[in-house]
Image (cartoon, rainbow, N blue to C red; front, side, top):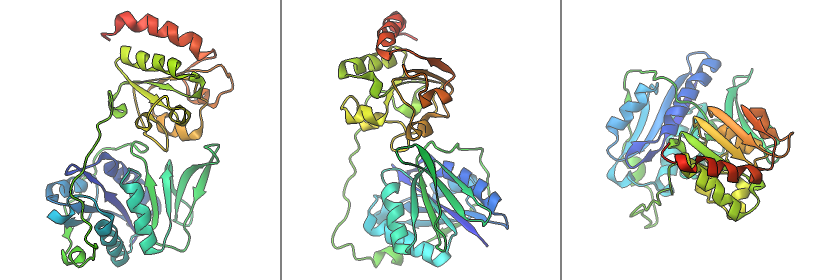
Length: 332
């Protein structure tokens, strides 16, 4: 019987949303594979039995749980061998990870132990005619979508950024938790290294994934002074500021604002873009937005292909006017 596994990452003793997004996608893949393919999950941490039950609500038939106070904080010295040994024993056909800061390190490390490959930062997953996983990843600067396969190796592994897939309605199944014997990690030689604390830097302003309105700027903004107008417009509209990679490279904004396969995936009610060319890397992170408005002086800019409202003009002649127009209405 075929199996698709999803690793459920934990932050602050809670399973992160990308795990449920991946479980929803895993059921689509299982249906395409046919033959009674089962969806299962792995979970590592401390005091997580109630959290494990949530995975069953989203269709994980079996949850492999490593639960111990020593596992409360992530450490590659313990998490990697636990998951690799588990996968070697149960032989899943597909193993999916969230492409978070932790998952982007954990997934490839597990793949290396299993002598298989992993496709990173995928924008979609599908099953081909041979019932094999096809991972779709932007290539050549986002100009094309490459198809990555891992023939002859199991598990076939991939990581996906949070927000790429939609978390669908729950698919509840009876809770079946398989607790792992602590000897699996107690025997590990961690060479005296042990995590002692986690320090998180909270994001500045309204988090992108919570904003109904997102104002996004690209290289076409031109200067740091002009970038401040993007931030003011977002502030006056009660929204959040986002950016593309060039804006980060120029020092106008931080990586926490970046949208795309290397940043965040967003679904605001309104997305307003200025000076954005529309590389696939960026579009993959915002194409599920509600109303998409873009301003660009290049009438052939790819971003217009995913825009509901297209304004062909110099962004720096329009931005000041918009900021001034909404300034008295900051209470919106």
